[in-house]
Each structure stands twice: as C-alpha cells, then as structure tokens.
Length: 514
Image 1 (tube, one colour):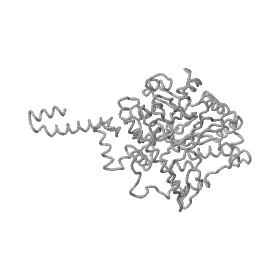
Image 2: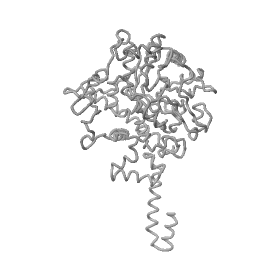
Image 3: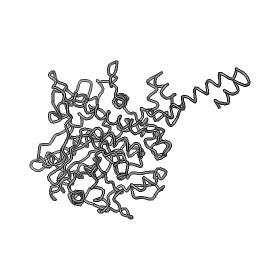
Image 4: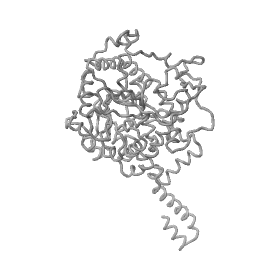
C-alpha cells in the first residue's frame, strides 16, 4: 500500500504524499518491530503492540489492566510485579515515594531489622540436598525455577529458563511433562519431576516404567528427582494439557498420542499407602544411582503427613527433600473452586511439615523447599524463617521471560510466545535475551534476600529466628511468628506429644492415608 500511495503522489497529485508518508512510517515501524528481539509483544503484534506501552507511559495505573492479574483473575501485587520486571531488565527496583501498603491493617507482616546490621554476604550460600542414603548430593541455590512443564510452556520458554539457570548456577524444575531436548540443550541443572502420569517414564498403559526412568535419571543434567503428589494451585486434581497444545514434540517428551488432550490422574498408581510411598522413593533413588530423591505436595491433612513420618521411621527410609507448594501458587488452568478453597497456604503448610519432621526427629535428614508466590527477597527470608531451606519460583520466572498474564495459557494463543506451541507465536520469544533476564532476576532477588538478612543483623539463613517475623493482628496488637504458630522441639512427638497434636499423632497410620 505504501508503495502504491508513493506512486500516486509522484504521478497523480502531491496530495497523496501525506497518506504515503504515514504508511511508509508505519511500514518502517512494523519492520523494526519484527526484527527487534527485546519485546515479544511487538514481534507478534508489530505497530499495534506499541499502544500497550504507550498507555503504560501515559498512565502507569493502566498497566494493571494488562499485567496485574493473576492467572485465575485474582489481584497480583503491583509492587511485587514491578520489582520482578525491574530486576529482570537489570534496572533498580526503587520507588520515588513511600509505601502504598496499609501497615496498620490486620495481617500486615514485617521483618525485624537490627540497629547493628551485619556486612552483606558476597557469595550466596547454597543448601546441600542429600540424606544418609544419598550418594550423589546436590547443592541447591536459595532461589530456583519452579515446576513448569514443556507443553504448558513453549520450547523457547523452556530454553530461556534452562539457559538462565545454567548462567546463574541454580536449578530448573522440569514440571511433570517429562524431559525434552529443550531441557538438555543448554546444560542447566534439572530437577526431574515425576507426576501421576509418569510422563517420560510410563508404559503404554500409563504405569511407571523403571527402565525408562533409570535411563533418563542418568542424564548428567538431572541432579534431583521430585515425585509430585499434589500441587498448590489445584491440590487433589490431576494436570490437564489441551490437545491443541500436544504437538509432536510434546507427545514425544511425554510418551502420549499427538493432538489428544492429556489428563493426569489425581492419584499415583505405583503406591497406595504411606509405607508404599516411602519404599517407592527408595526404589527411585536406587534407580537414579544415588541422586537425591524427594516429593512435592500441597499440605492438606496434618494427620496424613504424620502418617508419612511414621512410615519413614518404621521403614528407615527418608526422602532427601520435601517441596511444600502453597495453595496460593499459580497455574495456567485450574478449577476455580480448587484454586480458592482446597489446600493449605504456604505459611501453614511449611510450618506443618517443619514441625512434623522436627517432632519426629527427622528434620536434620530432610531439606525443605517452598514454592507459591515466591518472587522477592522478602519472600525468601520469610519462608526461611517459617521452616524452608530454599525456595522455588514459577510466576516470577515467567514474568522474567516476558509473560504479561494475558490468561490464554490453555488456549495456545499466548501473545508473547511463553505458553503456546504455535511456532509463529513462539518465535517472538528471543532465548538469549530472555535467559539473561532470568539470570538477572534470580541473582538480584537472592542478593536482595542477603541484604535484608544483613539488615536484620544476621550473616546468613542460619541466623534467622521465628521472632524476627512479625504480624499485625489488630490496631494495637502485633505478634511474632513464634507467638502465633507453635514450634515443636526435636523428638517432641515421640517423647511428650503436645495436646494440640495428640489426636492426629495417635490416629496417624503408616499403612493408610486417612
């Protein structure tokens, strides 16, 4: 069109020059948008994509309309989102004005700083994952990429996350969708998640295949194996991948038919009791040649988790780690009632697991991870205080690779190429650029956590104590974490069971989940 208008202006009338100039300018902008690699929106929506950024510049509050919502439509903290984007881009996450939070509102939490801060650690500490039965322990970073499957994510998103993990020296959880070539290409450390569908290590009938498992667990990049019991966004419900997203590559990675909707069962077929579960974990560790093995769950019944602890003690088998997923965690698609009303939030779940392991004398053998809306240095510090040894982040990592929360994850039409298998949309996500953003975000967030710990007067995670986290209960009432939540002493459930735990501890049965 621009060439036609230019010809008209030269041959017919100079009055055609204004529209010709406009169309030429738009063509130039569109060409630049297609060639640039910084903004996925502009690569997929040349020219039109600029309106999004224009509205944000004119009125920052309009940014909420585009990217402030959670996947399930609930608000996502604007301050947190701004911090994530700033750190991913390598800019300062600072505000020119004071806090927008109501610090006098019930539920407001804050950390206790010290008059005498400590020097900030220059090297981030890691967490050794590996109990007494593990022969190949792994040093886990304080912040890692949480479980997100290939299929749910695009190939380029997986490549960017894994390359970012390789650059930054942290772990990348595969999610339950199996190990694809994109998880292996850049050599980032992997935590291989095995879900109820046993994708990547399943028989034709959907049972666990030990031969396939051993073959893939031997990959050099696989550092740990995580058995997924449940996830926070939809506890008690299996995963679902629409058939439109099951491409040939996705089908190959999962061992399922191409184009068919994949529904994971809500339960495992390899075990039915707590005792069988811990035996299965030992079997996985043997098949993985001594690599760390653990499980992930969203905590529901305290009694069931205590049954697991009894089974661990009875069998003399413990996982190397337990990943606690809070019910506030996100997902690309979940039944709203499951997301809103099932499962314990991360705070309660962490404390339940930490107390149960401590009270049964198992805590020193098992590391605890935390996932569920972990996005800032404050989140890391809070979760360490509540009982975690390390943290994982999914949503913030997706922001780092360009997610704008368009809420089209299940439709295969993600506008920025993060959660789609459409090659045309996926090409907009530039792997080298986004992987640097992932690495920068992780490094800046861990550094922030170390700075916060130093401001609290401690030199690292080992110095954190429950009384350092406070919560406002009412207008004139503030309690420390150890005043709000009971903390069990090592072996207390075995020696002198507290009244509040007695009924659950007595009823917990290592031979049944109930």
